[in-house]
Length: 309
Image 1 (cartoon, rainbow, N blue to C red):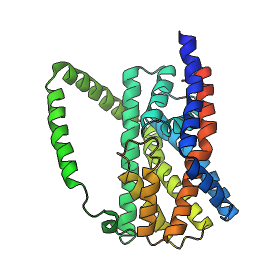
Image 2: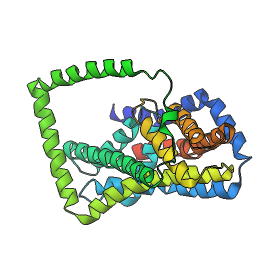
Image 3: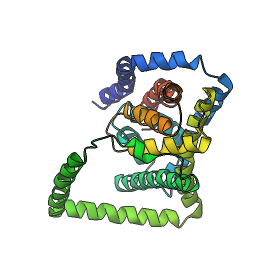
Image 4: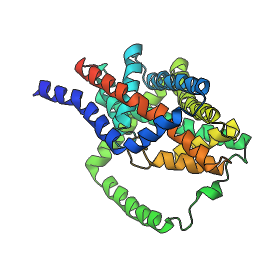
């Protein structure tokens, strides 16, 4: 049974890639067509910068645990996790891959979960903090008022909040749930204190959490330059960070669809023309999502076969 499950897990990522590619074939065809119209030196630089995002993610993952993780396998796991993240709802694929990787490396499930929570916290704080710093330095970079659609669904958000708060309160009233949550919080706080007692780990955690979104914003800037988009680099970075923060809670695989729409709107709001902005976003997603998807899925299948995850 274990062998059968492992074989299925080896094939499943490739099947999911095929399904997603078929469903998004028009976007892929458009992106490949637009690549030929861009200036290649800028695109090659953007591709090189994209390759640095996986070591940055690995650095942040290492900073979330005290034990030294195997470096090459950790970077390979981040490459595979990126593919899994684009095949499953946002964050779920990468979290599952990294949780399994840490448990195989000898960490308990509780400590692996605590390290995962610390990573997610650092990544969120790093992205929002970088956005806030850029907005302080460039307050006119993005007119946020133009990003809000007319008739925003405020009522729906209020209803969702009215349902969510009693649900959380009901779960908190269950003693077993309180016990599990309290145990997890104790473990997570203990892990966080231990990590921050080691300057090297704390630097890796927070440094990687800042470098990762900065690299992704840099990729968007380079792609924009390849198409000659007339928007300052700092404004492009603000547009990228604002768009990704805005769609962080949208439960689509890898943000496919929602990220593209938010980025186009943000680039146009930052001062770019609609047609070049659309080309920039399509090629940016081609470099950061579609081209690494198949090799990432193959890496994921290989790691499963090697029992690394």
